[in-house]
Image 1: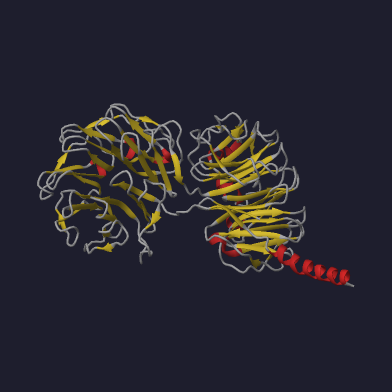
Image 2: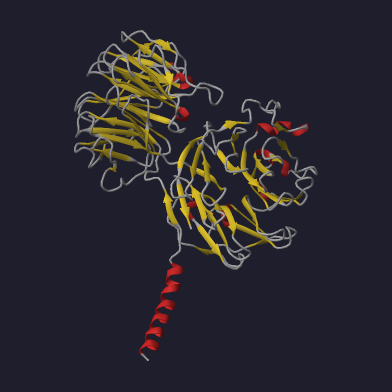
Length: 626
């Protein structure tokens, strides 16, 4: 009797606990950037205490040499603006400037900030203080203003130029420089009462000026411009040797020197320049830690420096720039692929590639060698894979992503010089367009789609790629941007895009049936030759159960843009989109319900690993697992 009673108690507990246990399965956050801002400047008063500022009123502070960074002030500021520069004269007193004439001041190391009255709406791009009282700020339209009382009041100074003044640097209360549009360099010896033009030897916009003293300084800017002076009067051009990733020299956004010999400059696409001889020779650091725009640099010593940039980028070196620690980076992730339960890849903007070899527990960056947007990824086998993206990017790896090389020629402009990519006839120009998605139907057959109706395929595992004309009947779909592609097998596949474009082939791309007129569609997924779903703007989900002959718009509990859709069987499906939206259905989409989410970031892709694990990726390095 006691055994029977115990049995029923245990059975009851099992039945009670088991559903609860199953219900606990949910999306888990594997990765997400702690900071979500474009950082614009970094400044240290000593080797321990420093600040970073950026968009969305971001202010970060460290008091332990960058081991930890904390937001300031303790309560969020009651406004959102982009801060452009920060300057402290000691560990307690500092200023920040930004858009809409914003100037903030702190007298307690940034624990609290006061918004100062400036009587201007000018976007302020530079600030320089020499003591507690005397400071200058600069900005649009030849604007420079000066304070004699620490910022309580400001007075605009007269400058005979309408060019934007991007940067200002004073070395004492009397002597200072300013730099800006059209190669403008201005100099004053009376605290800014009078400004004189100096010949910069360049017509490029100068975005930053940095003076070591009243004689020696440098200014950098657009077109890879670097100019320097050793007497405070005459400026000479230095060869920056920046790369030409976009067909022209990268712009350089900031520069700083530890002494007259050693300096660093921060540039576009993650380029870091270094000099050991005062700028006579500048050399780009070979192994770029990130590909994002780098906007601020501060040297603490000849060996230690900090660099910040867009996408929450924070970089730190202790060996003069030989190696860099990526303290923070918010990659905008766009596509994911799992070759097996252990091996997976994720790609995104600014050439981002991440790889896992342990089923997604850890993700390690790989160097794509590309600086533009990457939108699709797939592998032939565990070693050979391909990535597609903007600027006609088609990248190939033969060693599991340790190295990537370009198959395409971004400078080809549709002339057919990329031997392994062939677009014939009147569509040859499409070879120069970018791709937005990729689908592997089998290890040998893959498709990529993109800008202005670009479609290409491979039937030999990526050895060659051929352009495909899906619009031989001239419906107009051949000029629409195509955002989603999914092939069930080597013959049956779907493509979707702008203007509600839906294209289907049942013969491997020889012929296509095309429909248009729906909302903009971002993704498509077929669970069988007959049953297919599409997702797109303003909460659009459409379903066909007859191979696309007819489409039914399904009721969805959101108006947010949906960017990806996936079904694990004929009944259970998922969709995801902007602002962290996750939808689930268990009845083939007759009803869609909002699912618990763990992020507010835009979500871009959902994929299934062979073992059934689901993955969602998105902005700010967001990686979710289910």
